[in-house]
Length: 561
Image (cartoon, rainbow, N blue to C red; front, side, top):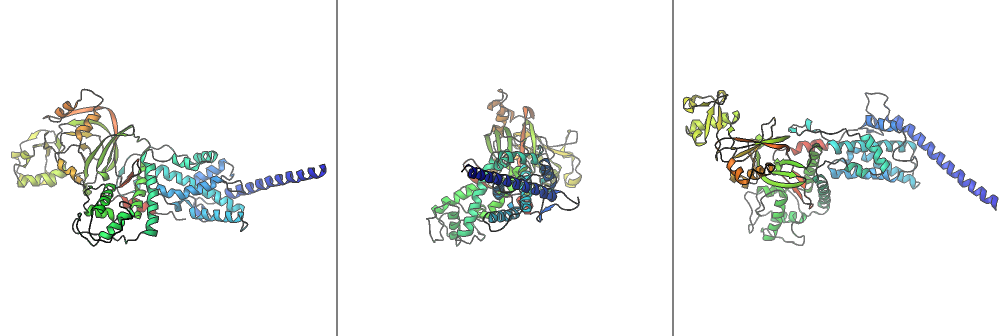
């Protein structure tokens, strides 16, 4: 009996040793195969694994060299949970607005399929398969990390100017991969690379929901979703042949109940409630009137909104990690809004007017250091040439009516009566036009200065009625703010002497007064056509400067393998 038991234990022990030896042999063979896969024979040739070009050939070689080419995602026999997690994260990267196909997903899925079939004795999964899968998973991790951290698209290569400076520490993706494998958490490792702005994760959730809408649209939508067109606005009680299609879209977005089934060409009050919800999502006046802006919003399909979301998540990835929400003035020109943020609380939200499409307000960051009460306005040469001088030729009293004076380059006043305006060549005008402080001044009663190469700043305006318009792309590039006194009060809160009464007095002087701030406040002039709030509500804005399409095209390009 004892001999039989000893023999049995010996056989089991021998089996374990054989299994360990086999695993070690497998790992050794796989290590050699990995080394052969990533070591280039020629520096001029592309590095490829089963037809897939490696995006991070240099980093991946360093990563595997440091581990003596030991496989990272298996023991040579079994694919552990973390390998499956990595594949899952590649699939989930679509919710970051990136394309899973960019990260070897098709080849990885094929290898996983072969592995799973081998576990069912329906095929074999050879050491070279383990090696190829290992390298592709590592390369996918490295390139995803780079895209999450810096963005897939380099904004410097775009036609539209992007001058928001990026200060980023070195990614060290190889070291991050070592840590992620050691801790067994790919998801957390990727989340650590997200933009510092809190809205990014909410935008990611919003994009996930929109993909769900797209799936539902493709399988269940009963309408046609052809482009709607109207000749005149539609109000409650009006009839239109497109009302049934509009109703279908409102039901699809769940802005009205799906139980509200009706075949009627009349725009009714129940539909109006749904239209107002749609208008709120797209930043339109929630008046329930179906105008051109509302029709544009109605025409946006789930695929259109997915594309918009992708572009804006990429924009957030371009922002510097140094831009914190501790104290920040953020102007979203696409939303015609300024937010003054302090410690992640929004202290002020104000409507703004931004540049016309042909005077588009640029995207940049700078530091606000001072403000000017009762400012003068030295008219830019282009405006003097194209607008002021032609106006003077039509009306000799134009300068006086606008409280403007003529000055030379030294700031000395020139009598406008000494100038023959009818013979003046606007392109050779030797003087400058300056508008004096006062209620008519185009800069209003205060301007907020953050020196920059574009000579763009934030200022008041006498044209208060323009803030009631939906489309507020109306300026020559500068940013006009609806609530200048409130912003001044917040900026000067460090000095108790600056009461509301004193600010009001300073805004109505006959001479400029410059006030230096006690700190420099970051100002980011940004362009965001999609975001989501803390309640999970998504918001979309019209691409007034046509900047989204170029980014979308670059994002959609798949690197050829």
